[in-house]
Length: 397
Image 1 (cartoon, rainbow, N blue to C red):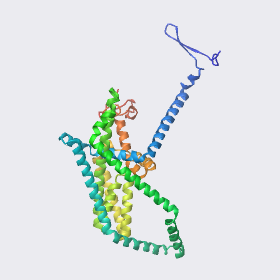
Image 2: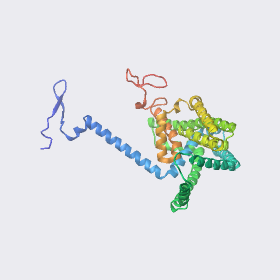
Image 3: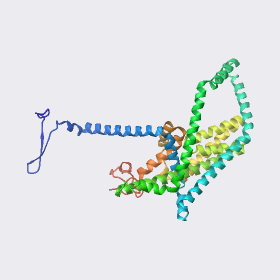
Image 4: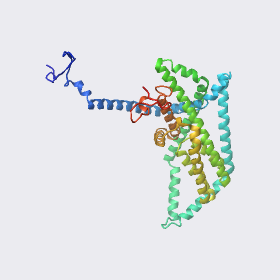
């Protein structure tokens, strides 16, 4: 006799009174069919998915010198996809079109880099003198504080800083910095090579990856690929346009106010604009600090006002037009994505987090059709609880 042989059994009868099946509630597997059992199964599934995701993240972190250049190259290739498609339709060979696109990128980056170096070299001496004078003013202000900080204590702090600079700890940090520079150069070269092949053979590479899919899965994979490219391209082009407007507006303000290093600060505003929310704040702080050191707190406050005004105009007028509804992410989602990206990959992760999140949400929006999101993401009518197509506002069967 088995362990559960004495358990009560229930018999299901059909309309004629004949038994159909005998259930044994006491059997072990029946414990997984009640509410608590289903909850336990779901918990195990969530733990398994979380474990796989954590393993993938750890694995990606170990090869960031490959994964980060890969993502950046994909983003750049998506941004230039319309240009490449236009040149191919005009009969331009893929190799020639790719070389033209790469040359355009090189010219733009080279021109921006030259302008930054020229402006810094031209105004560095003046800014250094003003910064030194500002430091002396800071020391004079410290002497007016209600508590005393004598010169001997300041000398001790300066000596401690000098000892740290000449210590082995600082030297190991410098060696780590050299390693970081080497990894950066390696990643840059790898990104350029990947970008070349994405631009030249992107459609063929994607067609190769789609070979295992059939039927509905193939259609879904095609939608996912198209949505990924269009989302990344729209995000980069829209963000670049918004960043350019921000940079031009703030640069004009700095130039009118006579703030030194206005051109490098404008370029920095453009670059930091690719980090939503946080980037604009950092750019405003840096511009205000330069104005404070060079021209005093009044001009610094005016610079802060200019930065806030430009950011408000951009956020309320330009961004909704240039980015579109499909790229609109809630501020809470952006903050979470920025935090996770920064923790996982630093500044580069902060830059890439938002477009990757936008791609993920875009894929959800086309999961079950060109305009049909995944079932769990569909809006529902409160009165009927049925799924509604966002594009037509009609119920989905």
